[in-house]
Length: 572
Image 1 (cartoon, one colour):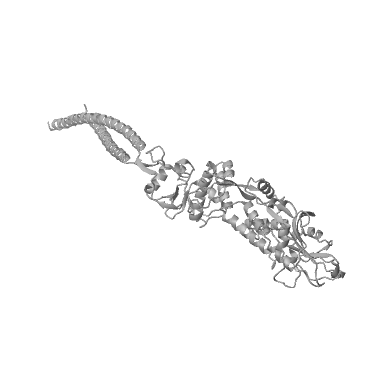
Image 2 (cartoon, helix red, strand yellow):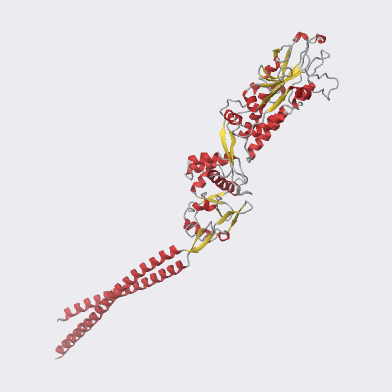
C-alpha cells in the first residue's frame, strides 16, 4: 500500500473510532438518565404506598365507597343527613363552586356577606338563582320557594322546616280560609243587647246624654242584627271583606240644640272587642310564622290601624249646625253626605267611602218633639282593608309601595284618597301557610339550601372554580388551606380541621397504590428494555472500537515502515 493511501486509511479509521467513542458516551449518558428515571418512579411508587384519601362514612360501617367530594357535601341526601357540609377559607368565607356563586350573585349577596339574615324574598331569589345556574330544576325551585324559609337552620337549630307556604291573591286567600283549608276560622258573635250595654254613659262627660237607642250590624242597606228583630248574628272576616259591613249607633235625644251626644259613643266604638277579634283573625289568616319581615308587617298593620280608630286620633269632631243648614244631615270626616232619615239607620249606609267614624249630628230646632237623633257609624270592611293595606305597604317597603292609607288628617280619610287592598286585587300576593306536619323530601331539601343560604349571608363567600375536583379539594383540606364547616349539636356551624369530623375517615388510597404499582412495573420494564438495548449497542461499539484500534495500530505501523524504507533508500 502506498504511503498516501495508508495515511488516508489512518484518517478514516481515526474518524470512525472517534464516532464510535462518541456514540458509546451518548449511550452511557442515556443509561445514567434511565437510572435516574428508575429512581424517580421507585420514589413515586414508594410515596404512593403512603397515599391516603378521605371518605365519608355517614353510617359508621367502615364503608370506603364514598370519597369525600364537594358534590356530596353540598347536595341534600341521606348521606349528609340533609345538613350541608361547607368549606371555608381561613377568613371564614364559605367556598362556592361556579353554580352556587352564580346563585349568590343572582340574589344580590355580596362576597363579604350581609352580616345578618335577610327576608324570604332574598332567599327565594337565591333558590331561583340555583335553578338558573343548573344546580336544581325550575320545578324544584318553584316548589322550594313555596316552603317557608327557615332562618334558624345552622343559626341555632338543626330542625328543618315543616311548613309549606303558597302565594295567593286576597280572593284566593279568603276562599281557602273560609273553607277551613288553611286553619280554623273564628267568627265574631254579635249580640245587640251586649253591644248596647257596652255604650254606657260616658264617664268622661257626666253632663252628656249618652242613652243608646240601637247598635246595629249592617251590610250595606241590609240590617244583619238589631235590637228589635234579629239581635244576634255571626260574622267572619271573609264576610266583612267581601261585603260592606258597618256598625251603626243611634244615641237618642239631645237636651239642647247646641249640645252633641256622640262623645261617649265615639269612645265606646274604639273600645269594642270586635277590633281585637278582627286584628287577631287577620293576623291568623296571613298564617306565616318564622319570617321576621312578615311578623313585623303584621305588627305594623295592627299598630297603624289601631291608631286610626283611636278616639284621640281617628274621629272627626263635628261642630254644631243650625236648622237653616239642614234639619237632618251628617258629616263624615268633614265632608257633607246629604240628607238622612229620622230613624238614623239610613245614614249608616253612607259611610262606604270613608275610613273611620261617621259622626251624625241632627240639630233640629224642635228638640222637645223627639225629632232629633244623633249617632256614629264605622265601616268594618274599610277598616279590614286598611289593615291589609298597611301589611302590603310594610312588605313592599314604606314609601315605595303602591298601596297607601291617607291618614294625614280626619278630613282627608276618604277611600278615594287612598289606595286600599281590595278583594279583587291581583297585584299583591300573600305567602300563606298551607301545610304543617312531618318533614318531607321537599322540606328536607328546602331546609338544606336554607342552611347554605344562611351561612353565606352571615359569613360571606368566595368562588373557587376548581373545588369540584375531588383530588384538589381533598388536598386543600389535608394541607389546611381549607376548613370544614360542620353543624354542631347546638345548631351552629363551626370551622374545624377535617380530622375532627367523625364521619370523615382518612384511609390508604388503594386505587392510587394499584395505579402507581402498575405504572412502576410498566415503566420499569420499559427502562430495563432500553437498558438492554443500550448495553447491546455499547457492546457492539466496544467490539468495533477494539477492531478499529487494532487496524489503526496496523496501518500506523505500516506507515512507519514505509517511511523507514524511504530514508534507507536515500541513504544508500
